[in-house]
Image (cartoon, rainbow, N blue to C red):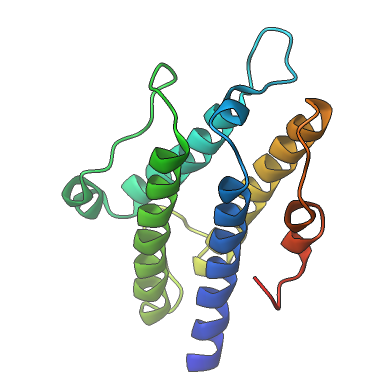
Length: 160
């Protein structure tokens, strides 16, 4: 079981480090970039949404822990900064990892997510990869110079 447990946790951490890599290469101005003519889908909003989905899933899994964490969902009108978004992703990554460990010890069962721990891992990564792709496309179409770490580095899982 320890090998599978380590693979689950390492996969989650690679996803987290990929998010951190992306955020580390952004500027504060980039958070306001959008390819939607009405301004929707700003990069900052997408990163906040990624956190919010984590938050909402965690509330369903362990409401008590979420209340104790002091975390709250990010509202549309809230100011988004790289430091705020980075911190929210770091803290939620750790809480999710703790919940993965709890689920692994509970034969893979996750309260509030009937399919289990591995599908939940897949759900989080699937959702976040979708938004990373949207963010990268927005950056490219907005003329943001993408560093090689974002063009190619996010695929070098043995280095992330």
